[in-house]
Length: 204
Image (cartoon, rainbow, N blue to C red; front, side, top):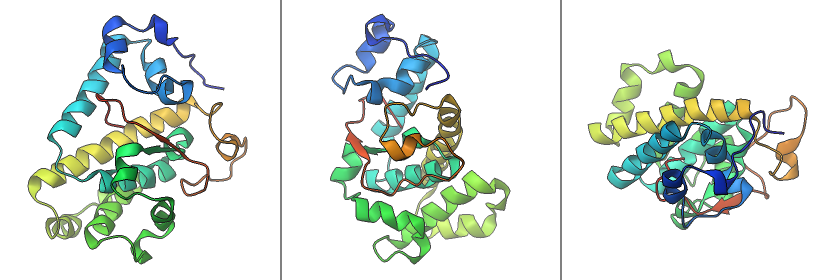
């Protein structure tokens, strides 16, 4: 059960409700926003930040989804791991590709740029001070400065807000394996993820 109750959609701040209009209104899709809705101005700022990242971003949806799911594994954020964004699925993020995230550096279906980005994301999630000059030199082989800044900010958002989401324990509406009440690690690869349209003003 979520540790913070959701605000019912019809009780959202009017502007916040407008920001998520046109998207799935199920509890599953709105759950994080419905918790943030206790503090509407910050909830709206979060959504607008995501909108700016999407509107002006240069990184492909496929890469960002792979990074998001890899970080979600290290965060053990079950609500993050259970979800696939429709734009990323349309861009080629299949469940077989998600399975590559178990051992991304050995995966034949990931590009070298994706592998470097995933190594960077993993270090940021697990040992951020190990991101050194050599790591940035690897990134520079595939990404310009603008893309590296975007990658870093996206990963930082996923690490920080994903860990926060994990502490909120928003699992009651997830597939069964994500609700298991034990200490065994859960993985994003599996047959039971759901695909959702991304709200127009959302980043993750």
